[in-house]
Length: 455
Image 1: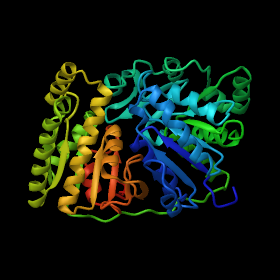
Image 2: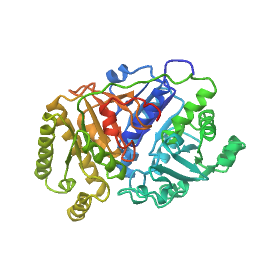
Image 3: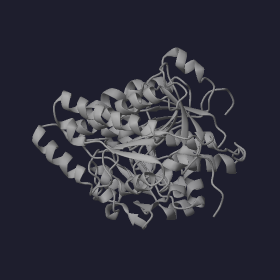
C-alpha cells in the first residue's frame, strides 16, 4: 500500500451512486474524487495523489450496445492509475434489466478488459438497510424491510421493476456468465475455501451475502485479499463500507476523522426527476418549510422541441420569482408514483414513439438546463438534484467535471463541492437517489448537512 497512487478506482452506473462511493472513502479519511467523464490532463493533475478515483456515467439508463462501447476507454484510463481494484458501482437495489443498465453486460466487459478470473459481487450495505441473505436482497424503508420483489418501490419501478430478489437469478437474465453464492454460512465458516471451490468450478460472478458488521468485514476481507486474481468487483457502495471496515480492523487505516456541517444558507435551488414515494414525502416537507414547489410537465419531452423549451422557460420564470421572494425554488416532475403527471407522461409517451429510456434522459437534461439557468440568474451557490438518472443528465447540463465530498447527510447523499471550467465551479451540490434521505432532506442540505445529534 505504499506510494501515492489510488488504492481503489470505480466506475459508477449513475451519478448518485458514484458520489456515494466517494463519500464512503472520503469520510473514512481517504481523500477521493469523482470525475463526471474522462478528465483532461489538467483536471486530472488537480486531483493527483488521492486514494480513490472514480468516473460517473449514465450507464444505468443505456442499452448493452452503448455500454460495450462506453466502458473500455474508462477502464483503460483508470487502469493506468495503478490501483489494484476496480469497482463497477451499481445501485443498492440492483436496478437493471437485460435491455437497460445490464449489470451482466458490464460484468462481461470488465472481466475481459482486466483479464479477471472472476468477480466478487457485494450489493448489501447494512448501514443503508440493504441486506443480502442466502442470495436474496432485502431493502429497508420507513415502513420496514422488504424482500426486493415485494418492495413497495422496486417492485413497481417504472424502468427496472424487480420481480426477483435472488440476485444471481436476476443476473442470469442478463448474461450467460456462471454464478455462485458465498452465503452467510460460508462467511461464518471458511469463505475463502468456498470462493476457491466456486472459481475452480467455473463460476465467474460470486455473489456475497452481508447483513451485519461481522459479515461485512468478512466480505471486505475476501474482496481485498483476492484482488490479484479478481481485480474487478461488482456492487453498491457496500463494497467500500466493507473494505473500510476490513482496512480499519487490520490497522491499514485509523479511525474516521470528524466531519462537520458546511454551514447554513438562506436559499438553495433544487430539481427532482424522481417518482419515488420517499421523494414525494420530502417534497411535501419542503413545500411547508420555505421551498417553492414548481411542477414540471414531463409530458413535454414527448412533444416538439419548441414545446419543451416553452415548458422549461415557464418553470424557470416561476423559480426566479420564488427566489426573488426569498424562497428556495424546487422544480419537480412528479410527487410520487400516483401523481397525475406520471399518468399524463405515460400517455404522451405511448403516443409519441419515443423509447422510455430516451424520454427519461430528456427529462433529466431538461431539469439540468432549468437548474443551470436558475443558478446563473440568481447567484445561488448550493443545489440539490434528486433522482439517480436525473442527477447524471443534470450534472452534464451544468458542465461540472469533478466532485469532492464536503459534508455528510444520510449514507449515499452527501453534500459535495463541484468543479469545472464553468461559471458553476465551486458549487455546493447534493445528488440524491429517489429513495434516499430523511423527510426533511432538502432542509438539511439548506442547513449545510453534517452529523445530527442523537435523539
